[in-house]
Length: 430
Image 1 (spheres, helix red, strand yellow):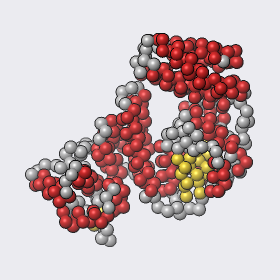
Image 2 (image 1 turned 180 degrees about the vertical axis):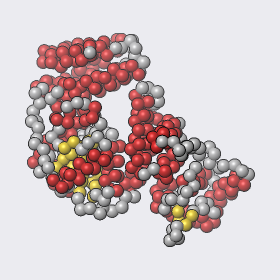
Image 3 (image 1 turned 90 degrees about the horizontal axis):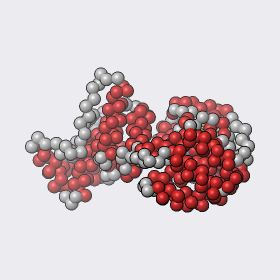
Image 4 (image 1 turned 180 degrees about the horizontal axis):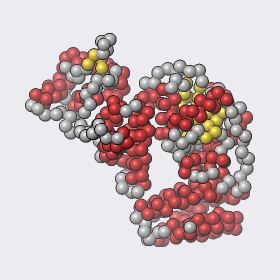
């Protein structure tokens, strides 16, 4: 483990949750940990020191007094044992490797630690990465690709949703800790960062908040699933230079556009980002706001440009060409779900993946109808097909499932659903 002392006292307190007075008492009475000193006399700690403190705290939770735990630590060290042997991960990294290869070592170790529920090892990997690479590089090239890999493993059915949640929660806590520790704003501009209604994925918006705060901006972070109601009043109270939304799904691209329409009379500059706008061709043209870009450097440049110009975008027509079908579909959604579930339950296959697929498809059909283009559903049908494949539903092809779905549409909605039925059947056959 890296024992270079680079962390100040504030980082240690946030990482371990220990009280400053308690830590000083441990250092004075038990010689644990043993921080270095800066030229100015300030304590400096290493990743190893962090693990020592966590080890001592864990022993306390197990019922030991701190004096007993410290004696146990020193006894193990004298005996040539590593007290952290069960928690410490030996990272073998050849420094002459290309940077991409070194980054991949950190990715692989973080993923392995998370799917093993080993928080200590995952935190060690992260702390070690911060001593070797710039902060933003650690997030964009190690932790973000790692969490996406874990999400893909869940999607394929190779790990549980609990493992995916464990990794996500660990990463979110790290980002939130760093946001809390960010310095006070040095720039006058205020920005709201938020996720539109129904958007539960906050990772990218949290990272954007962290990176912008590190650049001195005054960020008001509103978090996940921000409701449409009273948002306009919130904007008028805060008076930000920019409102920044992050949407990751087709469903929340639709609620994002609803937000933009709601704010149309506020004369505020609105921008957005999210992976769905990269994976769904043409979707950006249906959002009445500025697309920030596909990577953080492009996003930062676009934000600076928007602050300087305050450029507005002409509002798109709020009425969808599928308005009547959308209204009928929304009224009928519960009946569609119930009718189709009843039909699928007779297939003698596990019903849960099929009901999940139906809920997902219903949400995305409503979104594509609102946005005015059924072709936005194409990536979502691919997602459903892969879900059925990865859940080992070999006897349920996408074509068979969509045939059952369109039969339900015909039964529940009737002739009004013909455009949707024809599109689904053609797309599934392709």
